[in-house]
Image (cartoon, rainbow, N blue to C red; front, side, top):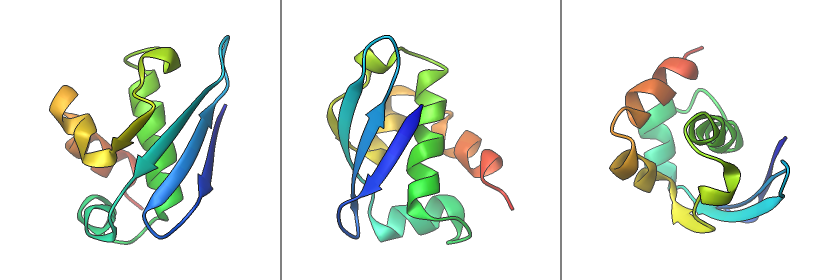
Length: 89
């Protein structure tokens, strides 16, 4: 289970429940949100789908506890294209 809580315009707390529950502080700028979604989905949906993407590749205990969303692309170059595809209306 992935729970995304908005703390401010660009800051989100994410809780991932699994065999071990983890918490993550994530930032996503409005510009990066628009770049990936065209503004067609909420930032919360982008963060949630980004965690689904990560969890398909690694356990929640391996996900950084604090990061900017664009950092995912540094580890997984296919991230931006895959997220755009998944979030198309």
